[in-house]
Image (spheres, rainbow, N blue to C red):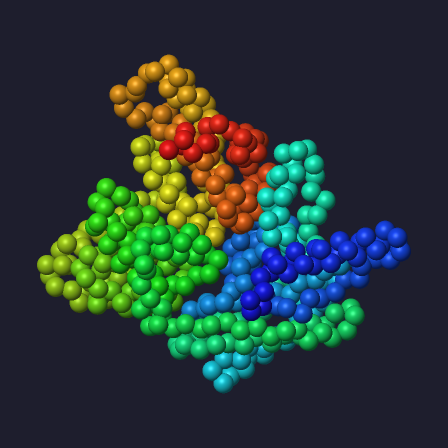
Length: 429
């Protein structure tokens, strides 16, 4: 969609619909459904990984602007107006992708999935109105359909630009949609891009799932090791390892490239890189056998990386919350968010800790109950922060409210994320 964001388009459509509805009130005429001409390029994980754990109404996914070899996209088409969902159901879309002097055609077909889109900032408006006991009357003014077919970047792709053209066969006739472009970046090019510092790396890893760029995973490992060396008391390595392990596990082609770059790394980077690949389930013997006997000895036995989902009540629970958020940042998966939410069932342990704290008692050790109580606080604070700042987490929380698999006690805690004093930053730290 070029420089036009889907959020801005949805807002513009919402206001146009509101204006139309003002006219409707006097004329009685409906607002006809129509297909908007701008298309979106939707990452394959949005349809396969994210949407299965969301409700019908969701925040807009990111419009993909960069792809690495092996990554796939679907074409997103938006409809506005009355009965737009039914209109999308009756619409068929064809698209073609032009890249490196070749054209790949995708025949006319129905959408794989459709979702109703929240306007940009919709979660904030809904929450603000709810605080005053008012239901948001403008939950959605647009719906988005994702094509059944996908286009994947060739595994051996060099740098370039792909152009996506699409046409929609609608109940109102054939519509030619505005073409879109996406930059293709090879692993060789991406691996040369370094990070300015840990803030730069943090921004990259926290939102990685929205715009995956696996060509930069080796520089990410290098930056994390550099930061850990400068600050030995930090856990940059542990968090980065969880992020990299999840990102590589989700992308075998990226893992293959990552492995191919290990022989050229320093022993420290190479050792941790091989550990991460091993933890992600990949073969690493092809590189290990090329190393000197001395370095091979240092790599054996290969240590196991911590399991992010291990909720055994220890002092490490706080670190495991970070590992799960790192996993979410890498993949956008529902599982780490749901697992973090499950720790909100430890409210009774927090109550015991709170009584002890108010009485002035100082524990001599971290007991299982104390670890759970502290984890409850940290989990609640982080969930509330992500709910405000990450649209997908907000959608996942709404899905959990409606899910029969989530216990009533956890749903109660989720509804109190912004009001529970235990989840204020001063308490959670």
